[in-house]
Amino acid sequence: MKLSRRDAIRVSGTAVAGLSIGMAKPNDIVAETNLQQEWPDHLVEGNLRQRANLPLNSDGSAPEHLPEAAGEITGTIWRYTQGQPPDIEYDYRKMAIRLDSRGLARLGGTFRFSDLEVLPQRSYTTLLQCGAPQPTGIVKWTGVRFSDFAEMIGVQPPAHYCRIISHDGYWIDEEMPTMMNSQVMLAWLLNDEPIPPINGAPLRLVIPFRYGARSLKAISEITFGSPGLPMRGPPSRG
Image (cartoon, rainbow, N blue to C red):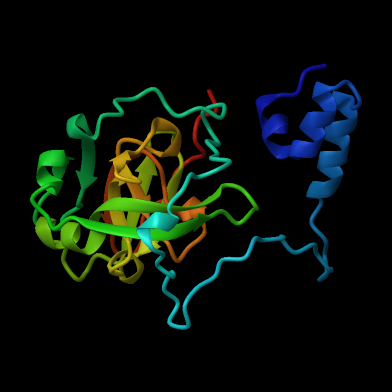
């Protein structure tokens, strides 16, 4: 028996690992998963997620480090492209990113590096930390503040949310006050070099005071919404 796509999505990583080494049977895994899916009719104790520490300043901002502290990001994850970066144009000088302003900004369409390079360039050396122990690393990011980008395209106050979509299908929604924080960046350099494909070329969102999953890699689209944005389906797993 083979797992259906629906069943494969529902089972845990541990169960899939058991399948791969022949220690678990598909029928047993599906039966166990169905049992786990039964919703209790009363409140029950649950297992809390174990998260790595994310040190922040007392005001909620991310601590900044000296540039010489910058190193590598270890354990980078691509969820929806079999662990590899999507097959796209990685040169930030050639990037073309869809901007769907939905009437909430003066400009819309497609923006390119030439639109960003006229803005003030910023660099921050901060910790990228996933909720799990990996990926992690103190690195230097260079790019532009999202707030400067938003001012350039003329975002209007009715815009409450911003959706950022990756080339691999992953996406996040953030409230505009978060996006307008001075530490939030659109970055194309990592440690003074073009961001490598594995780390999110050609353009990456950086939110250093959030866990790394919010610093979305390989941006393909930016959309604004008010009061919110419609749900997206799950990314294709190829």
